[in-house]
Length: 127
Image 1 (tube, rainbow, N blue to C red):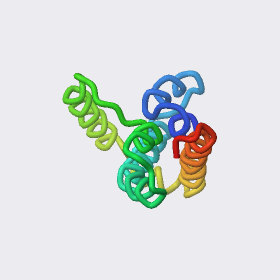
Image 2: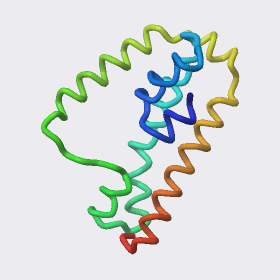
Image 3: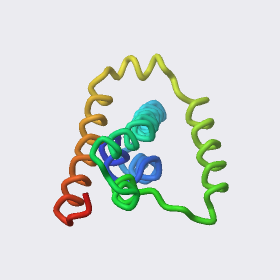
Image 4: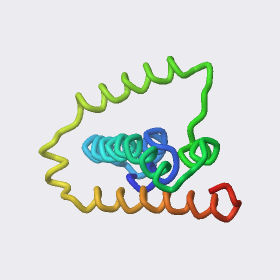
């Protein structure tokens, strides 16, 4: 689930996959937590990396996947609600029991997404 959520579209991928693989609540909470931790790290690291690579604002926007829409406020509110719900149901003891391997796997997938995006932009001549 972590690989799908990190590589595709986040929490909605977990919600779609979990019932099909009979994932238990602890696995879903772990996958969601890992995905959102990686997302938060990317929010901090992407601008730093973009500036270090000398990207234009347009190139950075394409690479980071940012876009402005009329639903921005509603989206933020719903994301906070979803994160609160997940956080209230997260068992840190279960996450500890699952070990570090799922987190390492999620990190690798996140890094690959970043690298592939950069390579595509370089191939297109945007960077």
